Image (cartoon, rainbow over all chains, first blue to last red; front, side, top):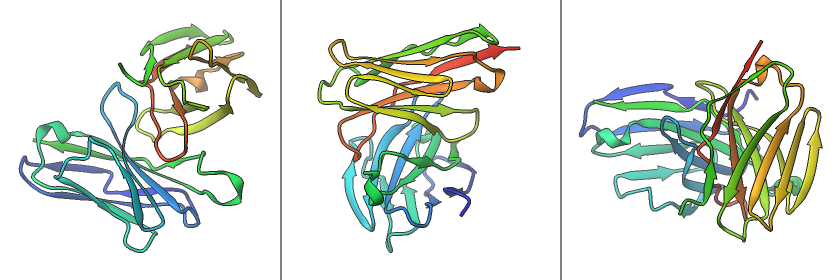
Length: 117
Length: 110
């Protein structure tokens, strides 16, 4: 296992289009997080899953955003009717609550950079 | 008020210097304090974390937490050019939701 992977790495789209990103976590990790990061800022929490259940969503996650983790493995983040303000790096992270770690160590993927024209 | 405040830098130091990176936070319920390092165009990676107040040392890195003043520090001894990155603090009270500072960009000059 080589870590968390995200696809695509870069996405350029026109305003109003829908986009979907994929995250493949480390295989034995039961928690998966999505973050958004803009230039000069730290990652902002969007949502997280424990197995297939989406347990928390940020107020940042408007109705245009939806995330799924249907089988408790990979996850997708879809943005509908993209706006220029959605331009950012979208980061995925995974962690494990097993073995006493409580999910404290998150392993991040390389991110998907979204540019909305 | 933001949950976490962090000086964005950039902080430029010569190789071998001792570096001090700091954060303040507002939520007294925070009890875990994480430090992440992020290289350009990469995702963050966990450096170390501490629970409650006190110090924790790991090689050249020391994390320090003062809960009474809501102040978190990361010290890097004998800094190396490979330490050049953005350092993010992330205090939290459970592992469901992480709050990251804006990051301090560090440049260690050879």
